[in-house]
Amino acid sequence: MKKMTKYNLSNEEFLNYIKSIPKSQFNNKSHIEYFKKVYEAKKKSGSDYSKEEKYLKENGVRVR
Image: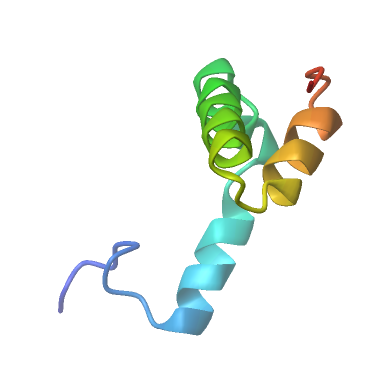
């Protein structure tokens, strides 16, 4: 039997896998830095950046 990894799960199993990851893992410094860069790039290009802005505000980062 094949080993179950996040790459060979069905859609429902993958969603359950994502829910099992602790929220603190997503709030580490490098992840927030990545969101800052995406936010700045989308803002500069005129794309919709509301999701990134909301995430950064939730994590205590001031957005311009």
